[in-house]
Amino acid sequence: MSAPPALPAVLPVESRLVAFRNAFISGALLLAPLIVTVWAFTKIVDLVGGTFRPVFFFFVPETFRDRPSLTILWDILATLIVVILVTGLGYVSRYVFGKYFVSIGERFMLSIPGVSAVYNTVKQIVDTFGTQNRNLFNQVVLVQFPRPGSWAIGFLTSKTQGEAQAKTDDEVWTVFVPTSPNPTSGFLLLLPKREIVELEMSVGEGMKMVISGGAVVPPWPAVKTSALAK
Image (cartoon, rainbow, N blue to C red):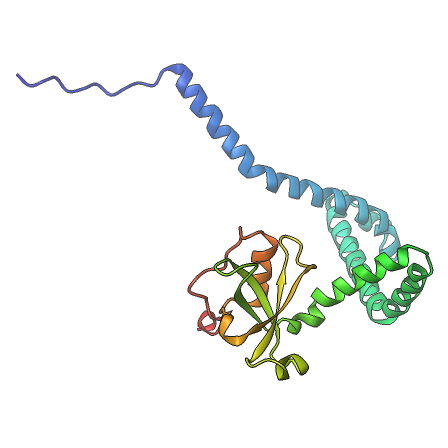
């Protein structure tokens, strides 16, 4: 005789309560960012708009401006005006007064004993690794450092070496091997071209790999920008 069909399992009341609780918590966690965003936006509009509404819309009759059904509309418009004015002020201060105030600040920092040395060092680091000097590093390379068989990420900085090139039998390239995770210090190596392995990753990807201690590894094969545009 064949065995009787198994009856469907019925979850106990406690298990159903646990499932309901977990589902509720999951839903609350999904809605929490939206609720916080809406709450923060409402508070900002209420604070900024409520403060500047009488200033910007003084020409609007109070009976129309202070009507409860239109209060939120006037507050949003007032908030947008404040955002535009602050943004305009930022652009003006950046392009008109920015260099002037920066130069004053630099002179002040350089006039403080002890602080001037630290300020100069930090400024040189920022200038070296800033966006204006991104072309300082030409390419990401692999070199055997600090001993043969141990490979390190480096950045090719120059292929022309003047006296060093003239006094060696090989074609010498300059490679900067940064320390990890702080790439502001490192080692300057003059290596024969044959001992340098050129990589296809970008300088930005190589720097991310160094700073992250190897935790962030660029994808391979490398994704070409031209391929993404198609």
